[in-house]
Amino acid sequence: MRTHLPTFPLLLALLLASCGDAVDTETADPGDTTAPVAFTCPVTIPPDPGHTPTSDHPPTPALHDDTVWYGTDTLWTVIPVDGSHLPRKGVWWSADFDVNEDETPPLAVSYRQLDGDGVVEYPAPGTNAYTPEDGWFMMNGIDPDDPGCWEVTATYGGATVTYVYEKS
Image (cartoon, rainbow, N blue to C red; front, side, top):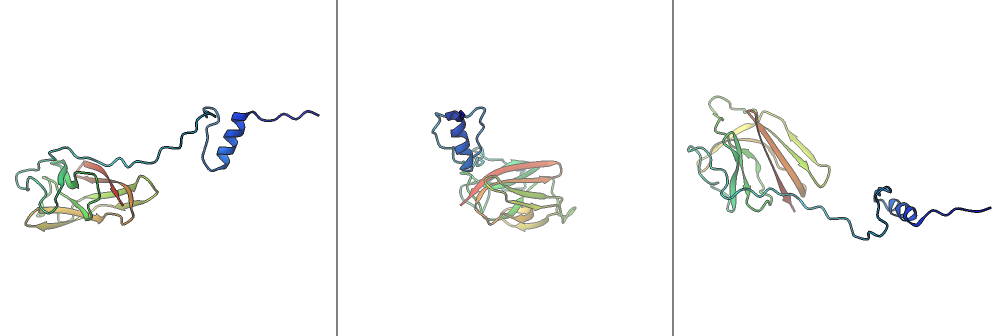
């Protein structure tokens, strides 16, 4: 009786698959010995200069060095120029926000971890706050405490702003 042995590419694919890495046996190159590419967080690097808000707001963020306004007049926030993490609550501004008309603005904020499975949702409504340096602004939620690569998405009055930061 004659026994047929599998070919080398098939053996290599089976061996790699048994190690926990998925291998596409249709396109796997048995001679490819390169390691998988490590995840790189696609942090948001804001334009320089950043967004310039309406005249009733300061032209640059008041309380944080190396940060800029990011977004549009309809919705903006403050982010670091290097894409790092800025520990703070979910703070947002809008030229359309009037605290006298809406003390609980329809602001929703979500955080999705790009290098893991973390998701944190803060549905509308948010709340309001005031500082002499920044004027009236909206808040909703606190950024996740876990390290990782996080995508933040905020919506308010039909506007959406998304950015990515990395927290070590």
